[in-house]
Image (cartoon, rainbow, N blue to C red; front, side, top):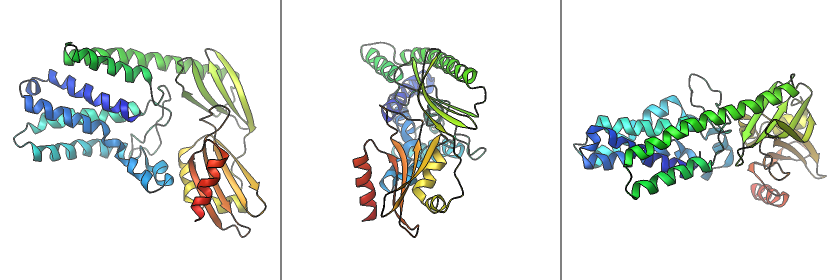
Length: 326
């Protein structure tokens, strides 16, 4: 989920914590638990600082180790220990319990969008991405805002958020049902599909789909029980080619391939250099595929520059590649 949603979820956990008699009877503990829940609701995303280094590190690691089983156990301990230093004599057990819940909820809700997490690492390295909730879900975020407003207007703090979460449970169940309908429709039309990637959109009725068979890849949009096809491409496994092999040594391209399960590739001869392009098919937007990996190579197949990330125009891509060579 986005940062704003994680913030309001931290407020929700801190509010529900007041149902705990130990927290409810200690105003200082209640304030500290709210702070712990807010920090805990953000902690798994502290790896965002990797963006300051480069996109490759961020793409390869974001929602990786910081969302893993060890991290979910360690974040609450670290946060509780730091807060206990500033609030001596606080009930550490209950502070840890609610902080842990905030951290766990952050990782748990992240598995429901199309990006996913490595929530089961080190038991499994596979990314878990259920693709039922859009990464910025207006219903979830605005539901929390409405609960905060009701609380400030005098509604019971804990029961208001508890009621919201009961509603959200049914919302998630409904989204699973809607996604499964889309999957079944795609499978009926392509029984030979080896991979079906489904991603939600802002519109509850629309889903982005990439269908891969042994021979073709289809990019489509699902509306209800209907698939509307945008493009189709021959499925081409990465070949054993000198240009491709040289590009695969680049860390930006390696980060892209570690993250993207649905892509097409092409080699473009630009005259004075070669460009190897990998295009993620999952995030089609206004006829454009903005998530790409580009590697420039000279005639001796030395890497000149590369880029992995979100690009919404050819001009901005050129600027980033030129900047990388400086």
